[in-house]
Length: 152
Image (cartoon, rainbow, N blue to C red):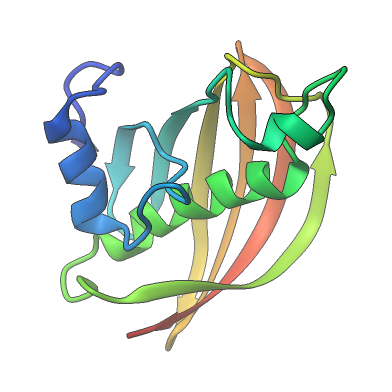
């Protein structure tokens, strides 16, 4: 298992490691740190939800909540870490092709640290299926199955 020393790596080195694997860039990069990767099998990553994220201006001003689709995107980027870290996959894109059985159990708020734990269930040709859960303070906030199409 490829582990990141220390789970609070917010350094330039930590960001460089993330962007060496993922093609995403700010403002659409939703991984603050990699906790662990088992290439092609699973990944655990965290996102520090900013207090002042632009989403909260309209969702909802009186009761700010991270949109569920962004929670799914965080989960998708975490799964992509496991897939795209495999040898020979550098430079590929993981296009989200489907979402199965998504459930949202608790809201994610400004200042929360969301932890996504994603397992790759199958990989056939360029189609990948993943399943995982997201947590805040150890409590599950979401779960979903995701399907990716890999391309260049």
